[in-house]
Length: 240
Image (tube, rainbow, N blue to C red; front, side, top):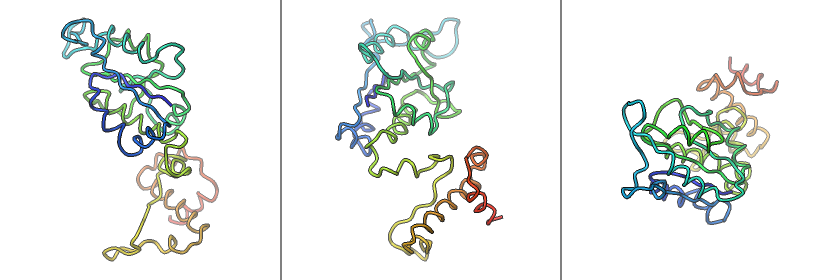
């Protein structure tokens, strides 16, 4: 998969693409990243990519010309993929959306800044707008990093364990069960006995039940949308 980022602040992505899971994916050739500086396409001596909004108002707006030219460079010829704009007005990022995007050949992500991007660039260039939450940040760079990290987890070969993405929070509409590691007892706190038993069927049932209970306690709204089996319902009833 190719992921291209269009931004006014390319330096923000250097450590993100070279560390941890994403860095290993790059080393393995599973994902490639390109970061484009929108200012490089500004046609003025000051590399200015923003200007005052028509109609007045506070702040500055990113001009269409540098965005168009930068997008055309990133897309090249015969582009196959999705062009995304990070925006509070966009569709909420969730597991299902991340899975769909992970199947794309090439993602181009436009990061807005200041008071936004000239609407003509969004209308002409963007396939979809995506939001990471109902709040506003100073720019689209941090949301782009969140999107990239979320999507990359579903690209085959990126995660160490093949089942990792399937077992974590929201994979099946529920929060993840609690995890433990060595030592079995720490400062008087013990790991649940079932996890030490070696009984895989009981461990699987315990984990499912804990996921259900955690979701009920912390995000009960998710239970109304999750596809629960009769066994799931019975486990919830056991705690009532």
